[in-house]
Length: 128
Image 1: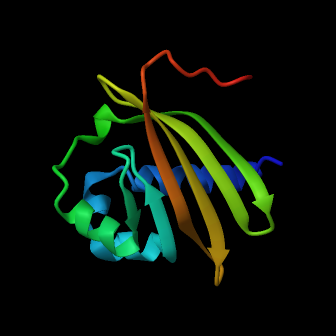
Image 2: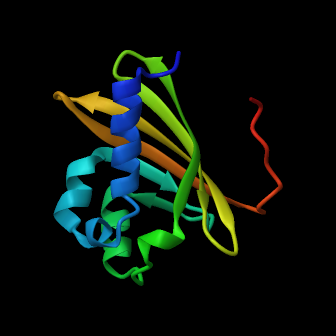
């Protein structure tokens, strides 16, 4: 089941925050959004935990937000308080498919899993 419109808007906003350079550089902001059990399968093939992501983002070169565009944004309720978010990031010269699992934790949504997969611009098409 797809999340309702307000929830879908909230998840899109949260995912967009994670792309903003100022947000990414704020260890506190990232700590607040990532669950303690967070894990990421990066597009590099590396696996990161919460602390490793926070440290990695502190050293990340700043990229203008205008270069990253979210398309094909979808949500799927997996269980009460658990939502899968999928989307495509359009960046030249490559695109990536992204997926995140968000879990409601003490009345706050926290991300527990994220994966980024690099793809060619036209190599993946979602079924409508």
